[in-house]
Length: 82
Length: 82
Image (cartoon, rainbow over all chains, first blue to last red; front, side, top):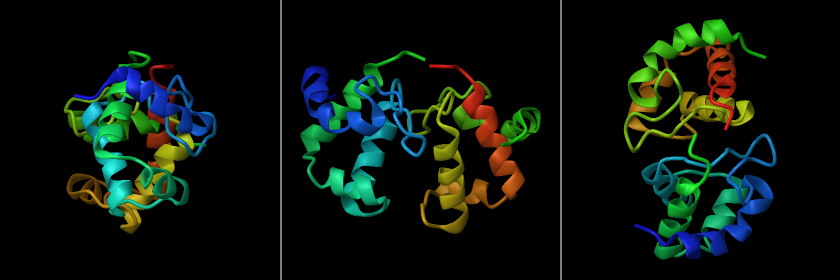
């Protein structure tokens, strides 16, 4: 499992669209707060490999390591228990 | 915008994985409750066109009309104000 605190630091680069609180700041960006960790890991990895494509997310995901993915998923999962 | 009540009826076929309440019933399925409507419409349409691929969702999305997509997005967006 990822490191929540490291995830929060890394999430600074996600916040303009997804919020540091995991709540979408623009309609085309999904809310992430409380999302299942497994889904978040898969989504980021699919953007990294190109299995899933999105102009912004493809670019952002390229900057992430395996540890970053785990940490971000842990962080956003931990937020906003729905 | 979609029809919430029609969306709720159609959501019966989504509920085994995503919950009739929009809360994931298995780790690989994302929560949908309160998700942005625009994101939900895009996700379903991407599965319909094949732009996005997932064994289960590709199959399920093929059963949906444009109206179904709008109604389901309206329904799941309306749930669980996060």
